[in-house]
Length: 289
Ligand SMILES: NC(=O)c1ccc[n+]([C@@H]2O[C@H](COP(=O)([O-])OP(=O)(O)OC[C@H]3O[C@@H](n4cnc5c(N)ncnc54)[C@H](OP(=O)(O)O)[C@@H]3O)[C@@H](O)[C@H]2O)c1
Image (cartoon, rainbow, N blue to C red):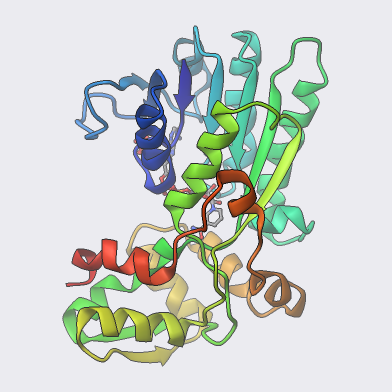
């Protein structure tokens, strides 16, 4: 049995889908198990809150492996620790944690720091007798962050964003999930960190142009200060501090150098090329119409 946390979100939902396709027994964690999350009849949905440790023993009981996704905000170290401790108590053998590429390079921005703290807890638990093994997946920026541009694209054919010039080898979250599924279902991934990216480095103007072509209408990109992009993202439900940190990273030369670098790891692990931004756009056009 594999427990998937974050199962109703962008990556976790794909992890659930791909594990089911691979014939695995899947349990999906959500804070709201009464809601129909549309995960499919094969999936056992379980209630639990990573911020409330008393809810977690039932979620991990009888589980062999865990996909661990914490939100990426300041709660990440605590949520990672809560789940990892419950998993250790339940004799879980392996935890695959979704981390972030900044952890790979030891960046000291807030989001990388929070993920590194979560990683550190998992390393310490693994050192205990019978502690769960760990694997850390460290992706760069997701292609799906383009969802944050959907509202002004629909209403005005415009995109307002910040830090637009740096090229980033954005990754399809379905490919992030594919790496997690590989680590959860094939041997030899214990104590491994996987930094992964998409296949091509694209600036925001290049991504916006591709979106416009696919939609059949030219889009106008307006560069705005980071604070404006942060506030717009907050109105769309994102944590402002996370957006501000992520955009701030793009102003750092060392980060830009790494972010623009398409990595071979995905293909080595999964055995096919990673999806392109054009493919992600074509599969998600309705979001922007
Ligand atoms: N976006 C990027 O470019 C990027 C790049 C690299 C790494 N990452 C990392 O990816 C992660 C975000 O993944 P995502 O985009 O798939 O997330 P998402 O779509 O925002 O989904 C968040 C999920 O977390 C669950 N959740 C939130 N609070 C919870 C809690 N207290 N207890 C239990 N579950 C909780 C939600 O489930 P319920 O609401 O059903 O409970 C939901 O399924 C973060 O760790 C981030 O740092 C993101």
